[in-house]
Amino acid sequence: MSDWVLKAEGLSKGFTLHLQGGVRIPVLRDAGLVVAPGECVALSGPSGAGKSTLMRLLQGNYGADEGAILICRADGSVADLATASPREVNGLRRDTIGHVSQFLRVIPRVPALEVVAAPLLARGVARELALARAQALLRRLNLPDRLHALPPATFSGGEQQRVNLARGFVADFPLVLLDEPTASLDAANREVVIALIGEAKARGAALVGIFHDLDVRGRVADRVVEVLPLREAA
Amino acid sequence: MMADDEPILSARGLSLSFGAVRALDEVSIDLWPGEVLAIVGESGSGKSTLLRALAGEMRPDAGRVTYRDASGEALEVHAMGEPALRRLARTEWGFVRQDARDGLRMGVSAGGNVGERLMAVGARHYGDIRTEAERWLERVEISPSRIDDRPGQFSGGMRQRLQIARTLVTRPRLVFMDEPTGGLDVSVQARLLDLIRGLVSDLGIAVVLVTHDIAAARLLAHRLVVMRHGRVVEEGLTDRVLDDPRHPYTQLLVSSVLAA
Ligand SMILES: Nc1ncnc2c1ncn2[C@@H]1O[C@H](COP(=O)(O)OP(=O)(O)OP(=O)(O)O)[C@@H](O)[C@H]1O
Ligand SMILES: Nc1ncnc2c1ncn2[C@@H]1O[C@H](COP(=O)(O)OP(=O)(O)OP(=O)(O)O)[C@@H](O)[C@H]1O
Ligand SMILES: [Mg+2]
Ligand SMILES: [Mg+2]
Image 1 (cartoon, helix red, strand yellow):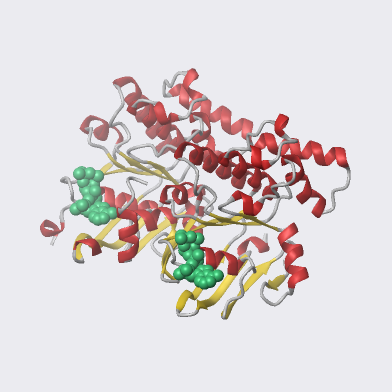
Image 2 (cartoon, helix red, strand yellow; image 1 turned 60 degrees about the horizontal axis):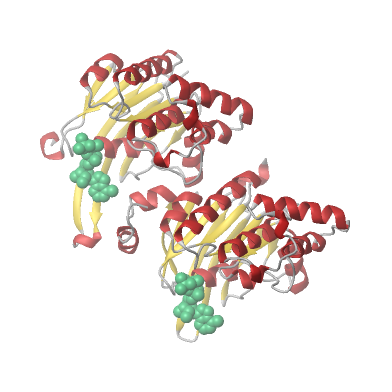
C-alpha cells in the first residue's frame, strides 16, 4: 500500500468570466495536499478562499489549470485526475472517489433506497445485497422505513442530506470527499456521521472534508489544512 | 474486454454544407460502448445534421464515420452501401425521432409497432412476439390493454414511449435520439427522461442524444459535446462542462438555464 491515497501538487485554478467582459478570477495557486490512508484532513479558511473549489477539483467536477491530482486506486495503480479523460474520471468516481456534496441532486422518480444503492450497483454488486446494505445504512441514519421507497424530492433538508451521506458511505471508497456533511443534521445523526467517518478511517480510507461545525471537525480531523485567499497567500 | 476499450462509433472530420450554410465543420467525436453522449447547442448549430450523418442517413462532403459492430469488425458507415446500412439500422441500431410519427407506423397497432421490429430481426412465433410486445408496453408504462390501439389514439407522451419500446425491443447496441422529449409538457418530459435513464443503464446501450435541454443532458449523459455554427466548441465530462465551462458560448448556454 502506498503511503498516500491522494497527492495533489502545484494546483492552480481560476475562472475567466466571458460574459463579464473576460474578467479573470484567480482562486488557487500552487495548492497542494497529501492525505494518507486512515487520515481525515479538514480544509479551513475564510469564505470565498477556495475550499469548495479545491474539493471540486479533487472530485473532477472542476478542471485544474495546472498541477497534478494523483489518486491511488484500491489495486495500487495511480491515476492523475487533473489529466484523466472523461471515461477515466467516471471510472475513478465509480471505484475510488466517494463524494458527499452539500446538497443532494435529486433524480426525478428514483426512490431513496435506489439512490443510495446506486454506487454499489454501478460496481456490479448483486441487486439484493446492494439494496440490503443501502437499507441498513439508511436505518442507521434514522431515516424512517416508510421514506425508503419514495423519491427524495419532497424530503426535508436533513432527510435529503442523510440520503446523500448514505450514498457516500455505502461503498468502501478509498477516498471520501465531504462538503459540509453535518450542516443540516440534528445531534443524534451528527453522532452517526462521526462514527461513519471513524469507521472509514479504520478501514484505511483517506478523507477530505469541509466542516463548519468545529466540534465535529475537532473529533474527526487528524489535521487542518488552511486554504488562504490568494492575496494573503502570496 | 478488449472491445470495451475501443469506441463503438468514431467520426473524423465531418463537414457538410447546404449551399452557403456550413452545417458541419470538421466535426470529430468518439462514443464508447454503454456510454451516453449528449450533443447540445443552439438551434441551427448542426446537431440533427450530425446525428443523421453519424447514422448514415446523410452523406457528409468530407470525413468518415466508423462503427465497430457486435463481432468487433470496423465498418465504414458511408462506404457500406444501402442494404448493409439498412440491416444495421434494423439489428444493431435504433433511432428515436423527435416527432414520434416519424418513428412509428401510424397505421399499425401499438403491438404491431413493437412486434414489427422483432420480426425484422427474425422472430416468427406470433404468440412470443405478442408476449414480448406486451412486456415492452408495460416496461414503458403503457397498459397492455392498449396493445391493439393505434398510436393516433395515444397522447404525445405515450406515443413517444411507444417509439422507445419499438426502438429498444431488439436490444440495439447503439441508439440515436433526436430531442426525444421535445414538444412534450414538462411533467411528461420528466417521466420520459426517467424511463430512458433506467432503460439505457439496464440494457447498457450506447446513445448519442441530441437535446436542447441541459437538465436532461445532466441527468442522462456521461459526456457532453457543445456545438455552435457546425463546430464542436467544447466537450468533456458532463458535469465539468456544465459547472466549469470554458468557452464563451458554453458559459452563455449554461447561464441561461436555471440550476440545471
Ligand atoms: N464555477 C465558478 N465560476 C466562477 N467563479 C467561481 C466558480 N466556483 C467558484 N468560484 C469563485 O471562486 C472563489 C472561491 O469560491 P469557493 O466556493 O471555493 O469558496 P469557499 O472557500 O468554499 O467559501 P465558503 O466558505 O463561503 O463556502 C469565489 O470567488 C467564487 O466566486
Ligand atoms: N436538408 C437541408 N437543406 C438545407 N439546409 C439544411 C438542411 N438540413 C439542415 N439545414 C441547415 O443546416 C443547419 C443545421 O441544421 P440542423 O437541423 O442540423 O440544426 P439543429 O442544431 O438540429 O437545430 P434545432 O435545434 O433547431 O433542431 C441549419 O442552418 C439548417 O437550416
Ligand atoms: Mg464552500
Ligand atoms: Mg435538430
